[in-house]
Length: 199
Image 1: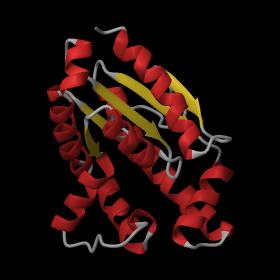
Image 2 (image 1 turned 135 degrees about the vertical axis):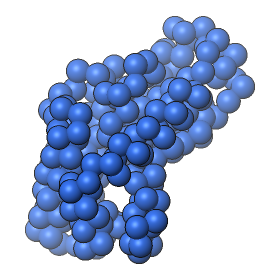
Image 3 (image 1 turned 90 degrees about the vertical axis):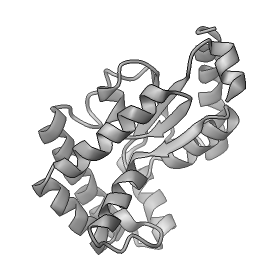
């Protein structure tokens, strides 16, 4: 973290965003480790709220489970869940020296380096099916439902169209044909230039 501060003269904030199963969590964690920044997940912050509400948030692929989808319904009925999480994420962003894996911060925070990971529905479905041991059809149905609910929540709450309005982003990284290592190396080349330009 000290190295980034020294090079930039100010705290670095990097946002990594993309639709479900595009690889944003894995990439954000690796970027945070490389640049000695703190990793913050908007999804994990929401899961913590779900746990407070009595949901069982254990296991992998929780958001795509019946419990996760039920929490989506509750969030759609009460947008305060998301507003509360976003206020906390904004506080972390303002402190700086952080990588945020978030759907909302690129629109809500003025500044930082904002990356959108572009992945097709087919690629995302295949990744979700492998991760959760689902058939392609099962994964596709879950993915479409989650995409729709996520987009609806943020459209109602903030007015932006997730996955369609890419205007806040400094970089659009197409990961359809890139493996995890290739995506990481490509992103780091651009982050290095961004950091050096801020020194």
